[in-house]
Every structure is written in structure tokens, then in C-alpha cells.
Image 1: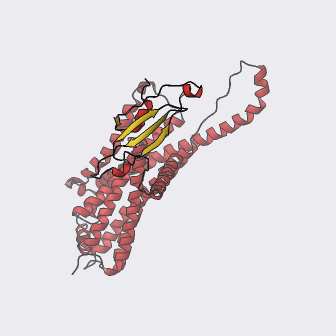
Image 2: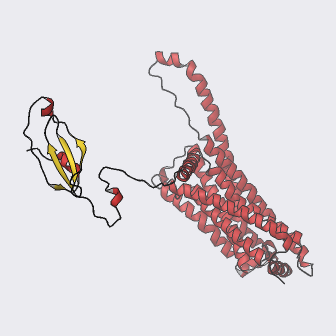
Image 3: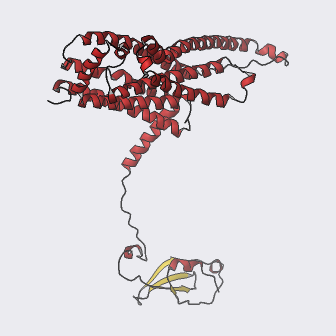
Amino acid sequence: MSDSLPQGAWAASILVLIYSVICLGAIVLLLCMLFANGEKTNYVTLIALVTSVSTTASIVQQVYYACHWRTTKSTELQQAKASLETPTIAYTPLSTGLNLALFEMQFTCYTISSVLILFWAMALAKGVYNLRFKSLLGREASITASAKVFAVVTPIVLIGITFVDAVQQNVVAYLIISNIVLIGSLVIGSIIMIAVLVRYVYSRHLFRSIQGSTSAGTAHSETHPGQPVTAKIKVDKMLLLRFTIAFVILNAFEVSLLSFEFLRKINARTMAAEQQPDFSVGGAISDIEQFIPGVTAALLAFLLFGTTAQFRKKYGDAFRSMRCRRSRRPTPVQATGGTGAWNTLGSNRPLPTYRCTIGAGDAESVELQDSGNAGKTRPDVTVQDEDSLLGRSMSSRRLRQPVPQPWNAIGAPRP
């Protein structure tokens, strides 16, 4: 019996896989644009990089699930029965081996993204409130780099600790260690985001009041030149809007991850009572649909941060360049000339040798004569001398000398 998906679930699997590849292409395009723009270590680039890793892991897991569907379902039943003795197994996806490693990789990436969003919110709040700490002056760059390293390393270490036997036997310790970073980023980030939005609304209100009073106080300020000029307050509305949308979506995703843990606990308890795995087509399609939210994060990241005005202009330029490149088809170029030199290229026929004759009269003329055709002359070039235009006579001289390139004779010095 085949170990792969049943016949009725292949269509859903292929559609979800194609959608996942599209999402991966979108996040890779965002990464390429960020790197081309010189933004290699900022928060958007790191979030896009982590999201691309999680999307790639999801695609690999989908292929693994499609090819080893029966083995995966049998392992789920075994793990569900084992969760009766080790309750922490019920909060995992009830899998082992590569399938479990791919799931933990995706969960770790989600946690890293939440910490990066938290630190980005803190940096945004620092800029909005114009906070300056004297003890940190000159060390902002090192602190930012340390925060990014902490955001990447800490979730990896904590997820690794959850595989220790002592933690596996303690449900409370397992849940705290695996979710403390996720919950902490969610709560602290929400508080900071509310504070940033409050400050933004206050700044907008203050800016409008300043604008309203500027026109009324113009005449008064002209009569009092010592009065200070009010400065405008600049707030990057689009950046705040994009960040807010990303933060809300990420928070909703984190809440769904936490709720799925307890939902898996309930499903494991129900599955443990079964005698055989669920090999139905409906169950396979339901499992396949659960891959969609994880890969959609990549598409959302592209739509939020990869569609700025600067990037849209680059997309348009690249598209127009591709169209122009397709429309321009290379055509053979044939050159024609009196000497016929281009027609002899690549052939074994010897090149003709020319003799140049310069004569004087009303106008100096240059005659080209083929040595092979002594009776034919080719007056290809005519040069008028300034002396002949003034009516002065010149003694005629004839210069007979083979010239490899006849057009150089025009610049020959006069005797």
C-alpha cells in the first residue's frame, strides 16, 4: 500500500504547495530589494529573512507529509497514546523525527519574529518620544546589534531546553519556557504600541493647531522679529501605519499559536481513545489546510514592506527594461562602402591595394586607384584648399605610394 496521500487529497496539497511557493518567492523578492537598497541588518531585513526560513521549512514539511502521509498519521496515534504518560507531548504536533524538527523550526522563527517586532517597537517609541539617555550616548549601535542577536539566540536556546527530560515531565515548566518569550513580546509590544499611537495622535493634533495659528500670527511675528519661529513636527505616517498593521497581524498569529497548543491537547486526548489512525480524505485535507497561515506571513510581509513607493518604482523600471529587452531583437548589420573592405572579412580573398594621387587645380582632389584595376580610378574624396579659393595657383605634384588605409591620406602634411 502506498504511503503517500490518498487520491482525493492531492489537489488540495498541490494548490497549497503552489501558494506556498508564491509566498516564498514574494519574501525572497523583498529580501533582494532590501539587500540591493543597502539595508542588510535592519529589522525589516531580519524579519524577512526569518520568515523566508519558516516558509521554506513549511514547504519541506508539506512535501514530507504528502510523501509519508500514512506513516505520519500512524505516528500521531502513537504519540497521542504516549501523551497519557507524558502530558507535554500533547502540546506538540504529535510527530517525531524530521516532521517534528520542521515544526519546531517554524515555531522558533515565529518567536524570533515576535522579539524583533518588540525591539522595533521600542526603537520606534524612542524616536517618537525623542528619548535621550546620557549613559547610552555613543553606544546605540552596539546596543541595537546586541538586541538583534538576543532576539535570534534566546528563542533557539529556550526551545532547545524544552527537550530536556526534566522539562518534558513538568507541564508548567514546559509551557512557561516554550511560551514566555512569545507571551512577553505580545504583552510588552502591545503596551508600547498603544503608547506610540497615543503619542502620534497627540503630535498630529499639536501639528494641526500650529498650522492653524501660523497664518493668524504671521502679521504679529513680522512686527516682533525676536519672536521664535515655531518648528513643524514630522511624523512618518506610512511607516507607522505599516508597522501597526504588521504588529496587529503578528499578535493575532501569536494568539492563534497559543490557542492551537491547547486545542492539540484536546485532540490528543480524543485521538488516544481511537484504535486506528484517521486515514480519511477529509482528515488529510484538514491537515493540509493548516499549512496556509504559516506561509501567508511571508506574503503579508511583502505586501507591507515590499510595496513602498521606492520599491514600486524599481519594479516598474525592471518590468519596462524586460519589455524593451524582449522587443529589441538583434539584426545582422551590413556595412557598405567604396573600398568594400567589410565584404572581404572572413574570406581568403586578398585585400585590394590602393594608390593615392593628390592633384591641384581649381580644387585639390584625392583619387583612389586599385592596383588590380590600373585603368579605373575612384574619385571618392574631394578636398578644397583655402589657397585655391583665393585664386592662387599651386604647382601640381603627384604622390604615388601604396596606402593601406586610404582615408589617412587626407590628413597627410602638405609639401
